[in-house]
Length: 380
Image 1 (cartoon, rainbow, N blue to C red):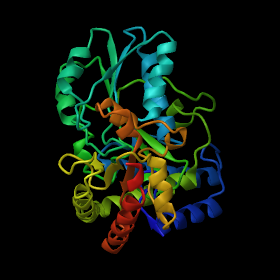
Image 2: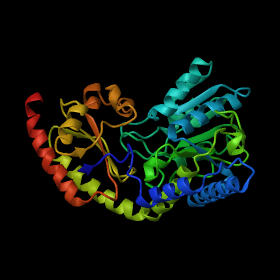
Image 3: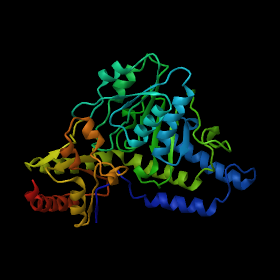
Image 4: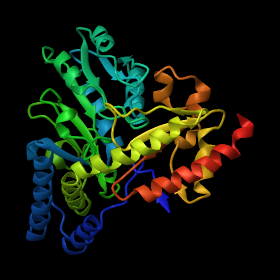
């Protein structure tokens, strides 16, 4: 089996699974309990929070645990919007955001908020000048992803941070789900970023765990109310085992970041160059200012799901741009926002590489690509 779908989810590190099993089987207390079993759970929770904070260069009291990226994005977009609604109801998100951000913004529109979508250029980068033109006196939130999940474009967070430097009343959120342990944190966790969302299963942690960075002093309305956990921001009993496994996975992934970058960028370059040799293949992911592990392409006249299943027949697993919306059968929203026509966008498939992949797998992929390309020639 060749697994080239690591942006959809990653295989948990064995060490992370071992941590999960150890904590789940031995730490039986609820962190909210007053007895010593509760204290044991609290110590694990606090240590994990501190380790995660250290790894991303933040303070432990700025880290709040969630169930994943979708919850985190919903919480920040809706929570900040309502918290600041007395000051304004205008929100800006980019045209290429993950559905968790985009749909949250559209939901707010139905609640009386005004939403603007910042455009991107033909390569998939947010147009900072166009974004600047959208800012109004009543703008309360700007949300821009760090790494696009469909084509891998690294967004100009530093430039946007400079744009917002003299606008302290605007909260700045970065969806960093596809960025953490893939590119250096300084690329997207600037001092101007107020909120950032993360998901464990994207960096070899377990599913069902994520966290949100909330800069000290920034206010947000809770999405879940109840027992007052997570500083009264996110009420529910914490997933202590999953959180401990997340901390372990993140430490391992961050230790391997340089190796990850070198290896995946090399594999991507080889595949990309081979794709460019085919006259009827479109390549949507460049190398400069793109994540090293994401490569999106399409075969003229062939729908993406056909390509996915053709590779599946050879035990090679890729995806149609975004796992979160692939079964809806819609063209890639990022490509449409870039001005790519619908037929080309519907042909798009995404490869997302990892350290566990190697050049022998790349060679096998390219061999099967040639077969699939020739098999689909009659429909082009």
